[in-house]
Amino acid sequence: MPTVPSETPSRIVQTLARHGYNADREAVTLLARANNPAAAIDAVVSAAGDDILRITSSDVRACLDSDTVATGAAVSSAVTTTEPPSSAAATEPTAPDSAASTDSQPETPQQPSADTPTSTATELDQNQQTQSKSPYEIEGSNATGRKEVVGEPTGTARPPDRNPTPAEITGDITGRSTGTGEYSQFVTTFRDRYEQLSKLLKGRVNHRPASAIADMPGGSDAEMIGLVNDIRSTASGHWLIELEDTTGTFPALVMKDRPIAELVDELLLDECIAVQGTLADDSGILFTDSIHFPDVPRTARPSTADRHVQAALISDVHVGSQEFMADAWNRFADWLHTEEAEHVEYLLIAGDMVEGVGVYPDQDEELDIIDIFDQYEAFSEHLKAVPGDMEIVMIPGNHDAVRLAEPQPGFDEELRQIMSAHNPRISGNPSLVTIEGVSVLMYHGVSLDEVIAELPEEKASYDDPHKAMYQLLKKRHVAPQYGGKMRLAPETKDYLTIDTVPDIFHTGHVHKLGWGKYHDVLAVNSGCWQAQTAFQKKVNIDPDVAHAPIVDLDTLEMTVRKFA
Image 1 (tube, rainbow, N blue to C red):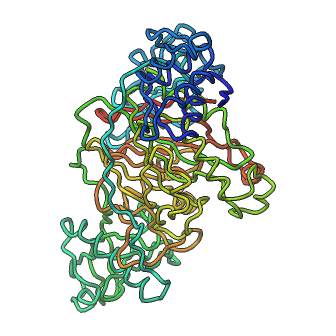
Image 2: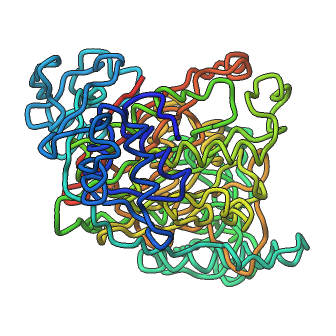
Image 3: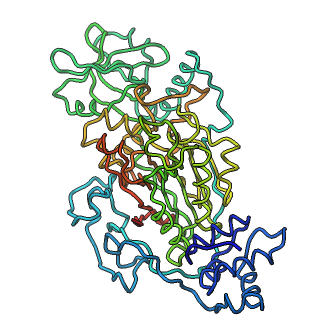
């Protein structure tokens, strides 16, 4: 007879999944409310035929009404709630129209202005202040201007079954990788990068090739699109930017007293930009008047779903670590079975399902599970706890058992079989995932380390990870700078360009929570499910743990729920 440690939906689902069955939510609720859930599950599993994959409420009622379990597992079919799990209370008041209000946690209106500043986990426990913001950078607030962070639910219910449509995935490198690391292949990758991104800039400047500009007379106006080959300061404090296109290189000088000089601080090597200016008398240098980035067009407008449906965005689960927060994960899984979460039909996981092996120094001392395959087995067990009627999409991260060089292909067949619970969609990193007509660019986010290291703190920092994401959107590339910690796999095309403007940009990796809007693109870094490790303490990383950003796909408003 199977054992059920506690009468929670996630435990019920896990037990059924171990027997090879999914179940609808009403069936799970009935089993959880039975006087003897173990006996009820045993009866249902025994009665199910070999050709049955999904346990329904009718199957459960038939068994509960039978003589075999009536004395030990009788339950009323009208029951719609379960007892609340023990947990921490909410860390923020619930917005007035939120579905998360409970008797034990009264609603408290919170109505800052629509220009509410950056939302990070640090600020979630502080009184909010307002400041003036560009309409293209609405940070840490949803479209109504409210910041919403609520605690875990206090009850479960029997909502109707979810009905998600299959996700459409584009830009997936899986099965398409042809790179062998030869020099010529790197040239091909960067040439494709230039071709893709220069198309976005040619409508804004009258581009001339580097070789043609070199032949123009001194004093001529010139405009060029190129990859940033070098940035250095002159003896006088001006900036010299060497640009490269398919015909050669040409230097552009930015005077330190010009307003555009501050844009030099945002430049990264290998990104694509356009410059406009006037040639020196000897035609050897371009005095730059303006700099243009590929950027998200200000005319871009996001697509939204035509019905009320939600997606949960999470990342960095890190099963196998001693610091994996299993209890918080179980509370999250339990919540997904409640009436509050009935509209959450999609779960998007942006990498690092497991802790991995040999990722950083002395990692073995912090592992709860040593074997990498056992780590994925454990992750699969935790994945079974979420409702089986959700559409799940997963991409790998740098801790996962795939190649480190980006773009990363999805997991191999052996790992896919291990993580087959609920039939998740597994794609490469990055991938553009379209759900309900809303496009979500999923990228694990290793390049955020590079961006944060290179740019000024006000432009990109670990405390405000979404601002670093703004820079990637501005550059229209998820990993613009090659070298350093960033590993690039040469391919016949550059799979890392943002050729299509997404409606949502979802990353992880840095273990910090932050979100905001850039030119109407919702940028979300979703934190992690791993408490601070000894290694993170050494390098001064204070993670934001057990948060689940929930996005309304019909409005692109967002609620952050905390489960620890």
